[in-house]
Image 1 (cartoon, rainbow, N blue to C red):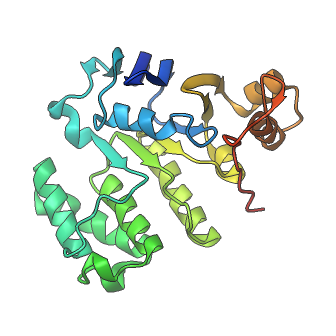
Image 2 (image 1 turned 90 degrees about the vertical axis):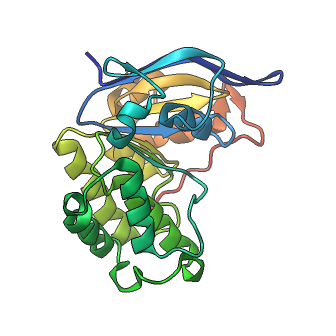
Length: 254
């Protein structure tokens, strides 16, 4: 049985269709990339899975529990694309606040949190208020808040955007470490190299999952020679036509 099942999830806002019968599943201990053009519904989809956004119809189940459900809140870590931080609180105070929400005793998260702060190079500023942070520091803190309680499902919306390459590599090692102990991760990304790190990739366009599968599946379905070529092809050609302003911009860090 899959760990997460998304079945026919549809969302309308007034008469606009944002998610169109989206269905997919993910297994325990896997890295799952979510990519596609801007405005394709990626952030809307991950918000729905995280229980932040209502959807019109369909079901989302974490094992045998329908989402959203407060009982499984502490099993989920969510990092939004837009920072949800309190500017007057320090990083350390943010951790204490969210630990309280999850009802976690201090000894359950203290070492883990210290290790994460060190990993993303924030140890020296944990007592400073967030309004003094740069944008990339805020992104690093947001990532820590999604991971410090070692969730079994981590939902991360563009977690490494704007970070330097060496730090991205360190963070992806942490993602793989979490997967190795059974966590499932959903990672929104438009970076070619990061897409290749994932066990499976979902390509979303106009609110629909167009392709779900491994690198080999993308190569087979697009007729390209590599995942990189497949994603560039999908980003520039939809239904055989040149894409419009919704064209995907992929970043290649190699």
